[in-house]
Length: 192
Length: 192
DNA sequence: CGCACATATTGACATCGTTCATATTCCGTG
DNA sequence: CACGGAATATGAACGATGTCAATATGTGCG
Image 1 (cartoon, chains in turn yellow, green, red, blue):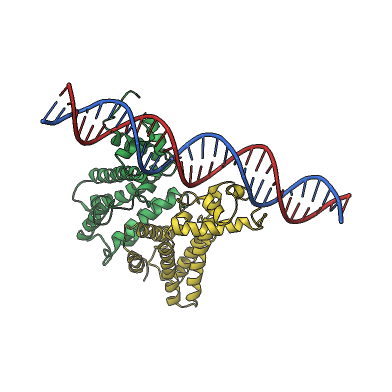
Image 2 (tube, protein in one colour):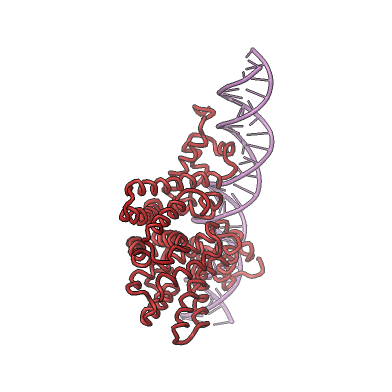
């Protein structure tokens, strides 16, 4: 009798609420019951839409990945054009965006790339952030802006370094400026 | 009346038990009560030695970090000598050891570098794996084996790339061979 | 021996994820 | 429009968990 039986969009509402909770408190320290209570819904209502608490978190993770992807897309859009300079700016911007996302949304970042979401989320094969990186690198390569023979395995290095530096920054093992060091070193080592 | 009051070394025993539990099931999915039960001890006995469940996990994390450090030390010992070849082998070996540790003990790796253990564990300043990496890089540098101007920020890149690739491998986002790509690319980009 | 301290226990509390039986609402079919 | 089934929500309950307060039990020192 709580005003609105059949919420109509409980699934979406729960994901949104869970998204906020994750952003604020981290994926651990999030309770289904609290989310249900915030939505004026019984604790067990969620189980009509999600099999599991983890299923809710995976949905949140998808939102997080989408946010990261959108952020990277915005960077690409901010540096359009066919010039070498633009290509360089796109590449550097992608790395910066990746790290900036992690710094601004550490809990979301941890969830997206954590054990819970390790599923069909973002593999090298699927679309999203990874292909944007690959495209940016290919662009640099075809422009002859890469050091000779540097292209091989460079996606792994760049993604790995971005991801690792981002992780180490948000855990406090590296200072925020470490992101700049990544860009600078990439410039020095792989570009010309 | 459970046989042995005053366990005598409950703290160490709990850490050891927790270490096994973490290795097997991950830091989440580990319960203090289960650990206590395995040690034939009441659930609240732990609170004489640890303020928190997290305190136990931090202790486990310290063991994990020590294990990583020992592993890296073993690599250094396996490639002694003053030759350039040995210096190269030490550097490559450290990276390989870091990733191998993550692959063989993913749950431990996640705990060590996860939010719970983000404390005085392993900052760039403190001893351990990071200084071993710095020393190896300095060694390469003084030998003139580094590309000109490459030393600046290279610790961040190498640690970041190792850490990121390790993380992405154990979450299934990169194949195990990505570790080799790291070594190869470093060889190609920063060494001569 | 006796006393103080460290250590462990018992019992309880609040919270959590999850399930089951039940109730309510919605919607398409007759 | 009526009705019945499907979708959705509820309530109560279970077992498990982290944690605390009060209590009991060892241990070692005077």
